[in-house]
Length: 260
Image (cartoon, rainbow, N blue to C red; front, top):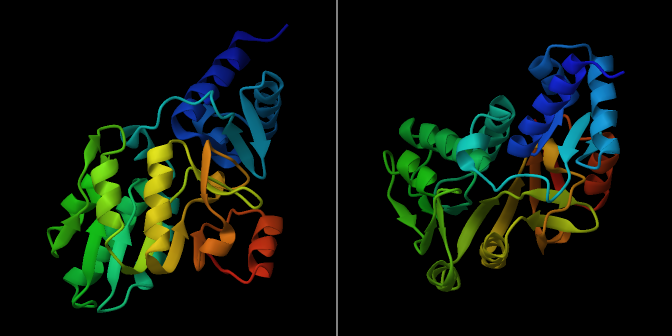
């Protein structure tokens, strides 16, 4: 008979997955305080119940089992990984660039890294655009920032909708940094809602250099609506936990892949 402790651990993993979307095996070990072999058994049980799917090096929630996106909840998930991605992405920006920063927790870390470069005098005459209230609050302390306004979404701390889309149609960026809720080699980059997908689609159309910034837990997954193929981007920056087969496929496509 299954112990109450195992049931409690499984429930703890599931509740975290509903918030974070995915976990690595190492994160799960730390979360529930058991051995790696025990965590793998818990992963198997969750997969059998149809609420999660095992991935390379971890597990992810099945689409539809996760709760609504929440910036507040995701802000503390995989922070160190997001910071590494952001640090490299910020190094790609040059003086004179016109930059668009997407919304999301990884983009917020990019805003922090970019603010540090501007404050240190490493960049000059950079024009910044974003639809993220978080990014605005970070970057407005060191630079002029143009906020793409529209209807405010409290759960994402950003702006979207008709007004935002019409503004984006009239702008051009030398560099765009965007995130995604999921990426699959055949399906492409995807978002959990139509408005976010449309915003990213417009930004990509009006950008020269297009850089995807997302952690490896989002690879091998599909969300509700695809907005870009791998062929639509210039560079993909992610962490070194990306599975080798996916990394090889991206590089074979001719796209720049940076593992940090």
